[in-house]
Length: 91
Image (cartoon, rainbow, N blue to C red):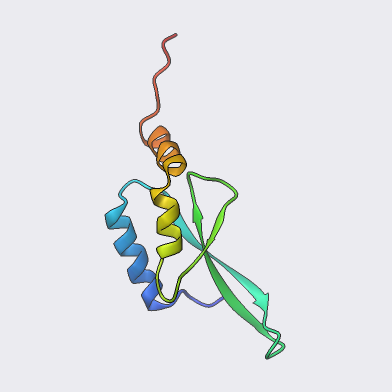
């Protein structure tokens, strides 16, 4: 059974959405095998709505620092701006 995201992740997402308004990102959860218990554990990743096909690890620790590096990347910013402010056709 997929677990709910931990409280620190909810807070980190709220903070990131305030710092990066208009950017499209969310958490995805996936059950993966846990070799130490033989059961399953929920693994959380971040997905960027502007950069399809990319999943980002959380961290380091209880942070979104790895993902924030992506949000500051010039390629991501360009894609996000294109989505938020599409160019109008001249035809």
